[in-house]
Image (cartoon, rainbow over all chains, first blue to last red):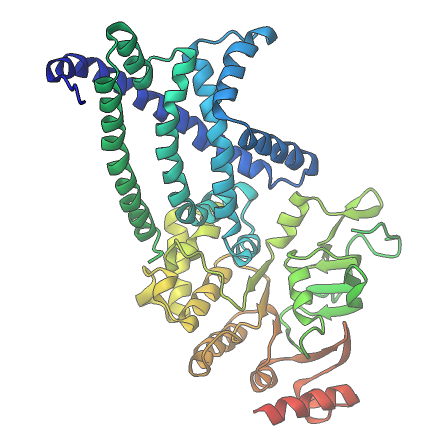
Length: 222
Length: 273
């Protein structure tokens, strides 16, 4: 029943490992966009402007309520109709970055809400400016409770990179599929893809937990 | 802030004895609940005023409005002769913008019931934050100033500890040093001993005594420590139902309260001890 061929496995492994680089690059770039944009989305909901808050909230709801793969298709295939002609990589990064920014903004929002009101009041009583208050007082305290959620989404974005294969980004899944189409053998490439994902996800999750503990120690919170 | 006619309020207070803090017909309400009802209260430079009263009487709100943690619904607050909640535009007062608020607020410092130290900074860093990032002092100057103040509150040895390693009394002493590092003209103490264990209250009240003795600060203190208020205050205000029910020297107010509500409150407090 099992027809596992080791010679074939060793043949395709270098190609898959090369594609893993693209997967990591896509996850890393997408996550970097999401981390920064997500913070902007979270902070935008805290400005005095009601209208801005409402628009941002609705946008986040919209992104969270529709599938990622639809958003990827939308940016790549519908974008050109609005004069937005993007390479698969650029379109993919925008779509996945935006998607995870929406989720991360909710993580940040929870972290920001967890900072006691008294911290804001102390900052006001010391006459700190709004930006100082955020960057010196509030965000350092909002970070530790956000780290677990941020870590989950880092693993999440990594596991979602195969969706980029639908618009032709040559990441792991795309490469495995290509190997399958060329050779009519799917068992080895897809099994290897699974193993590679597992081998990268598990240590990442563990690393995040260590990082979280380190940050809490660093900030004097234990 | 509600639109109101401010034509009767001066653009600034002038004359021989301008109070350091002046509440003029100040009103605060949450919806239909009136917390402070047309409050008039002057505090002279260097004066120590204690505010006592039952919970819900609006006493903490007085301090929070002065620290601009609460907006006001009517009237004007003046600090050092200048309006705090408003600013002059032409020949009339308009609600203050954030720049004006920051400028006037710099004269005021506050200590809180829950200390509110920044937990990710050491005691020393807590004290240096404002002087460096608001007053623009060099790190060296800010450190010298902060170390001096931490010495005054007896926290030199703990200056490199984070707040989580300090007792409540120690945290409150650091909080006093932190507020003082901004060199305010007015200090506000909002129930600063209420969250403390009885045996450490003295270490905080002693620091406040020291401030009264050694600095020409104007102070407003909300407290439940009647004995301390009696010892240290120039004047005591008894709040009831959003108004000053009675005020006077500590001897007069605690010794011979004139109003029935004051008598009731003080006897209830004495029974509790």
